[in-house]
Length: 208
Image 1: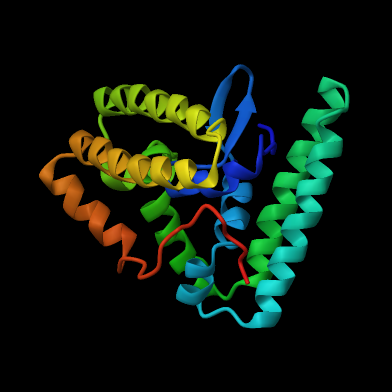
Image 2: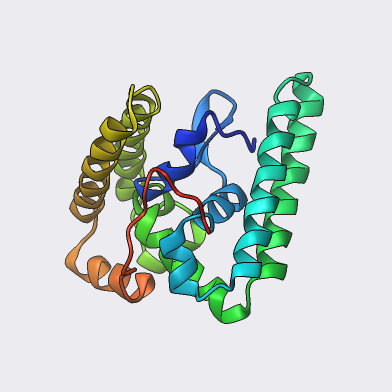
């Protein structure tokens, strides 16, 4: 599994799905990277009540990982994969050390709210929702549609167009997810997501 963010646009794709990374020839969500990128969002920082010092720490760590990812991407395949695995562990450890237990639990809820469609097939999430084999298969098809749209967003020519597309993707992602779940599963999903985040995920996130 690789920790590689294809462009700055990918940072805000968590709003619709997850940070795109590559494993073999398919796109997959990289959990550690997605958490760090989500923590750059001002609305998330406000929700978690992070101090200015904590926000600055997150911003510096994310910048360091971004620079490292650019260098790692140039390495030979075997070495590159080893480095990506190491970076994933670094991301996870950073989040664990930076957030309190309560903040981490809330971040998990915000991840479900923002990366719902691509997060729903994670083993722990799928287990809590009791997804059937048929639902998992259908979810993967819906995820592919979402990832194809991500590519379009990445290549949009202006921030204004990206913001508009991002808002559209948010709503489409929610609709697809709800179409997948039964009424009972929808109730469970709402419980797992917790209180809605008051702020908005934005394309021009600074995390400060």
